[in-house]
Image (tube, rainbow, N blue to C red; front, side, top):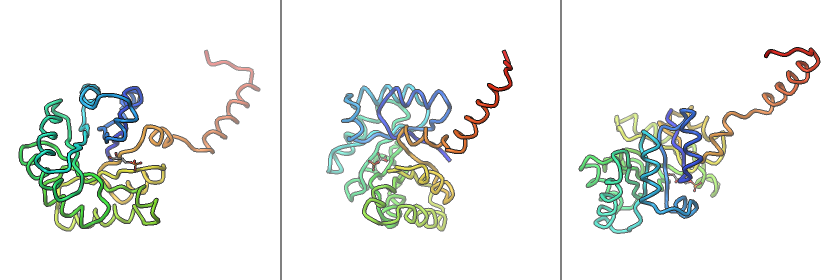
Length: 217
Ligand code: E4P
C-alpha cells in the first residue's frame, strides 16, 4: 500500500519523507489556506522534495478553465497530479488532461457510481472521502470495498486513493480491503506507530534496566 501525506506543510512532509514513508502528497485549497503559502511555490517545493505524485487541485468550476488551470499546475513539475472535482465538468477536464498524459486525481468522491464514471473518464486516482461519509453516519469503508469490487470486476487501472482519513483504523481497514493508496495527515501517519502496550512495556524495561546498574556503552 502506498502512503500519501495529506498536507502542504513542508517540514512535516520532509520529516516523513526522510523515513521513507512518503510515496506521494495530496493538497487541496483548504490545506493551501492552512499552510499560508502560495500554491505554485509550495507545490514546486513539495515536488522537489518528494519523488511520487503530488496532487494540486484546480479551483475553476467550468471544464475549459479547469483544463487551463490543470495545464499550468502540471507545468510545475513532472510529478504533479492535477486534482479535479467529481462533477460533470471535472470529468470532462479529467478526460482531456489524462489524454494529454497528465496524472489526474478525481476528488470529492462519495459513491461507487461516481468512482465508476471517473475510471471511465481516465482518472489515474479516485479519491473517496471516508471521514466525511462517516461524519454523516454513512460507512466510508463500505464505499472503498464497493469501488474495489467494481474496479476488479472490470480491470479498471484507476488507483483507489482512500482520502479523508481521520483515524488509524481507517488506514488498516483500507489496507485490508485493498485500497491502493491512503492519504492521511502527518499526525495520523505518526500515530500508526503508537500502541499503549508498547509504551507500558518499554517503561517496564527501562525501570528493570536501571535496577541492573549496567551500561551498554
Ligand atoms: C484528499 O485528497 C483530501 O485532501 C483530504 O483527504 C480531505 O480530508 P478531510 O475530509 O479531513 O478534509
